[in-house]
Image 1 (cartoon, rainbow, N blue to C red):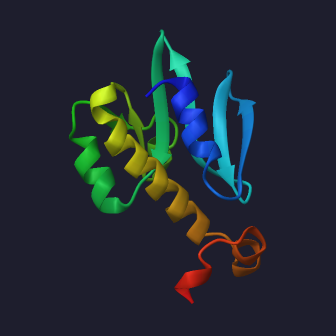
Image 2 (cartoon, rainbow, N blue to C red; image 1 turned 180 degrees about the horizontal axis):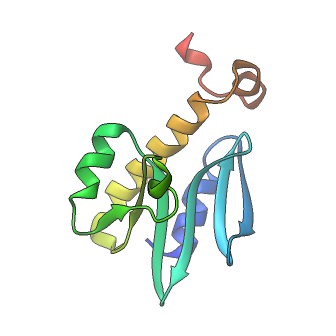
Length: 122
């Protein structure tokens, strides 16, 4: 997944915002909470995202992924893809969507309602 593809994908998700911070990284948030970070690292795209416990354990053993530096060191379940290719774009799209969902579910009910998120779960 290229930087353009990453930003386009995240932009399409409802209620998201984008900032550039942390050493020129593209940081995507929902309701003010980070769900994905992407940047070019040595001319390769590096993308970090939140995962479920099961996906964290699974992806932590996969050669294309690693526990995310900084995030995982603090006990958070965040993974970084270190070998993003067109072969794993579909998987990465799924994991980005899941990260967005997991983070949005942690927002207050009022914030979720304001952003029009998760309303069909009630």
